[in-house]
Length: 78
Image (cartoon, rainbow, N blue to C red; front, side, top):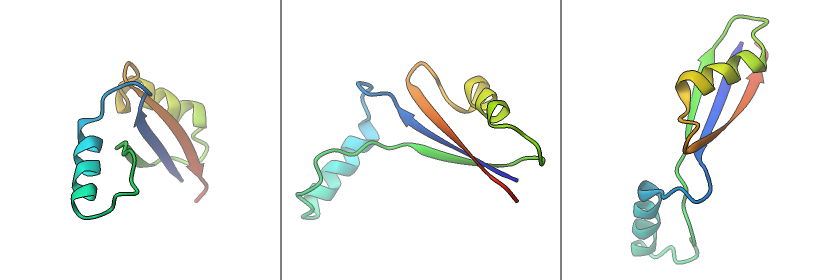
């Protein structure tokens, strides 16, 4: 079974990587891009029966920095 944890910065937290990407896109002529926020996706292979709550606990304890990041969990049956 696959679990996916999508992690993004909370609103208001500065995103220097996103700013650099936005600046580079503008330099390449993509002037329609107004803002870029960079996040991450972590894919886990978990045992059948693993719950969304268990994966969320993994995210809270290790995968995401909950002070500055939010996360969302998706489970995909095998």
